[in-house]
Length: 207
Image (cartoon, rainbow, N blue to C red; front, side, top):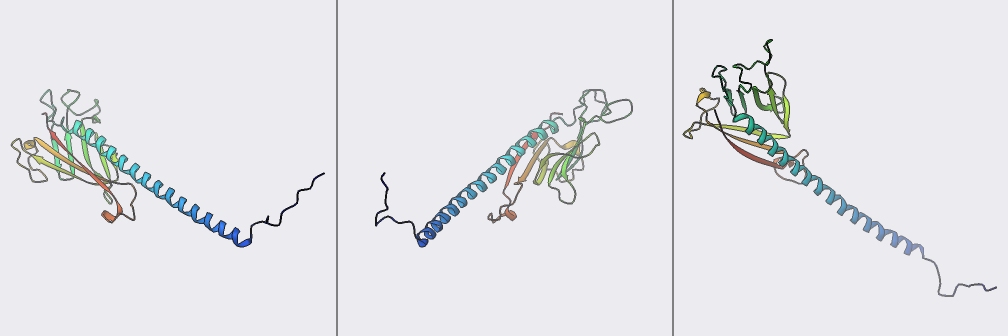
């Protein structure tokens, strides 16, 4: 039977060597953690920006599609048109059903798709773009909204003062919608840490 004996030069790690190894390992782990944390923040920010841009695009498409039909009145008896036009709020009607009114049934209930209001809400914070249909409650179209600006022009391109006194003169509407990221970035020096994006849509009324 052979017995393996440790040579004179074979020895274990000293306490100092072990502590140095642990310290180096700790520094490496901390560095890797910092890199991963930075990557995670960058990914989260990029995700917020993409979500903001996509929300702006969808909201603008919806408003464009609905506002350009303001005043649609096939019977000529519904008196459809833009009811109220201000810098941050628009209300309009359209007789989509062609029945000569904005009522959905004989009880006088308004059709949800024929009487529309777009504005920011709630009043205290105004951080959501809301859509009121048929005289109901605000439904959010886009959250984290910085501002919305409606600009109204005549057929010749003359800009109308708001609130517009004679809404029948409105032929073109420019909507500038500005959204912001859901969370503030403490390292971003502008706008209290919120990144913003704006999208302007030009709408030509059909009716």
